[in-house]
Image (cartoon, rainbow, N blue to C red):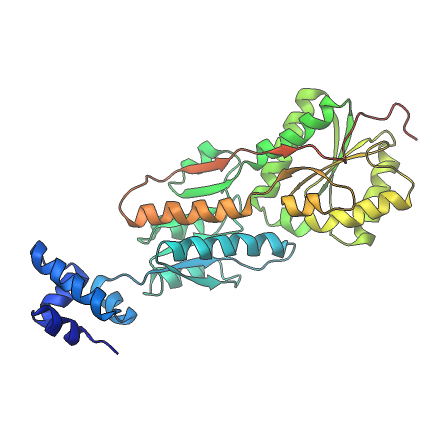
Length: 344
């Protein structure tokens, strides 16, 4: 294995000079730096990661806090994590994955150790207990999620945030259905636990749905639901009992998509002739559903990529903190059409 001493001999300099070039702790003349770099390339020298970290106080590791909580749709979570990992590697960083529900304690552990240079935090709540620790931390962080109802309020926290504009996504679903003449819409939302813990994206979507319903004179009914067939059947049966004239359904629960479509077939309700369905979900869920769904895409890969890029810019001394919301994109497919003139 090539050592630092081998590089020094090849370049005709002392080992300490090579060390200074690698760490950047002292100014070395350009010709000497170039000669050392040539020797490094020629010999294929790779600095020991631990030694490099000690010399530079950098680990080249990003911590990804991804608590695996109840009600979480794992495929989307893992897609974000994969985007974080691949983008981080393209910038020379490895990723340390933290999946426990430790809250602020996990932030303190990363901040108080040398395990990572920075943090990416997922599953952000409107009143997330990790936020005060992140605000006080010396290590930079980026949230995938919004710790407030609005971007302006999130900016006031002084933290970096990247997310889909879920409020606008909810509004876009209502606007699409209202434009097709639907005046009674029901929302099958995330599992109850997601709302109970104040998860930001779910709360913001509901705010957007209600605001747009009010603006368009649409009656809106919201039902949190687990993703099982039995839970979806109970919720949908209750919806049509309470609002017999319901002709539009918005689904923000990927696990509930296929149970819902199967239930509607079982009940003899044609999609979209009797009931139109819009989903907020990844494109692959919408496209491969038994009825291709009109949907607002959840851009999981883009969110992961943007979070890492903002963090790398922060570590390089640039990029002011702030909120970046991705505008929603609704794609019409086979699941929506004009409201039925006669609904039983």
